[in-house]
Image (cartoon, rainbow, N blue to C red):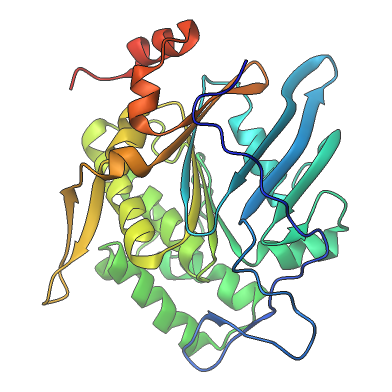
Length: 312
């Protein structure tokens, strides 16, 4: 059965290598290298799955799926708990390997890479886990700057500068010296988001970042995701089974005022440009925008929407 709104998978060059990231004083920008044979990534999708399958013994979670995520785009990955959303994100990170098919991230095929090569790929990916995964014994500054200092070996003063920048972006600049135990649930999620964006990755993965939060607190996290999309231009995959969050992000935009203030405002046009992918029984039964999703006559989608959409 054809999937509504389905787009043909774009070809991905398996041998393309992303530019090596280099850091100058206070800077976190990808280095441009035209002398080493590095293949420009502008024309390649950020993510490409080609006929990927994955199973735990007889439990098939992904069954011959193919899709692409263009650079700078946002995709909402929807599905019931246990549908395979988290597995798909782990495949993108190279934490798991598919049983068959190929996976390309930022122009590089990753499903057959050794771990040392995967570590290089992951330097350009930020991940926000549903478990938050902050280090309880480290301060907010140490948590947010952990990758910069421990993995990228940036000078401590430059790490501090970047941490102050990202905490200011998410409205927690005054919390830099606090411990995770001194933060509310919503603040901990926002610190986890700051940590994911600290190295300025081109790709961010969100695994149900608002699970367990009340609706009001969830909005504060969702607002930060909107700001990242509209002001930082990252590519993002947002996995969730909570449609309230997905539709909020899809229908709002971040606006920077002349004085530097950032406001989150409704943006009706976002509803038709956002892309949703619904995973069910190992396959995508829908790919398309919000209007197409709401108009679908598929029996499972109608039941899924009826049971999860709030009474707006």
